[in-house]
Length: 182
Image (cartoon, rainbow, N blue to C red; front, side):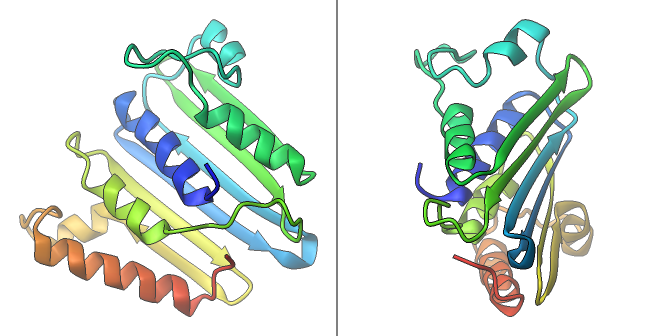
């Protein structure tokens, strides 16, 4: 994966599969400190100690449809390649927390990519998992919370084409306004 948005999508989809009620995604761009941070937390099933120990092994996966799990190992490699860090914590029945830091200025830091498209995929999940997204840059902060969106929609499904088109445009405009880095 060569885009951070795809890493985030992959990990958040794991949270949804783990029956999370809420997935929180926080991105913080701090160019002055040479740091690009991603935090993803969920309240899903969590992982056992054995699963947690194997989570960054590319030849380990809990999914039955494939024999390798490259999402976390690639993310860890990408972060460490930029002088960043990777921390994964999980407890069964309590959820999972992932904290990843990248060297902001490092040439090997993946671009963000289509974060608006990735968010739209996440909020359209069939499990009705709520998604709270925060993106902070030196130019401002954008927050997106499906709980607030659903309240405003008053029973209209997020998957409605008009709503999806509106949300996609709204997310893109807000990310552009806070001048996210690519």
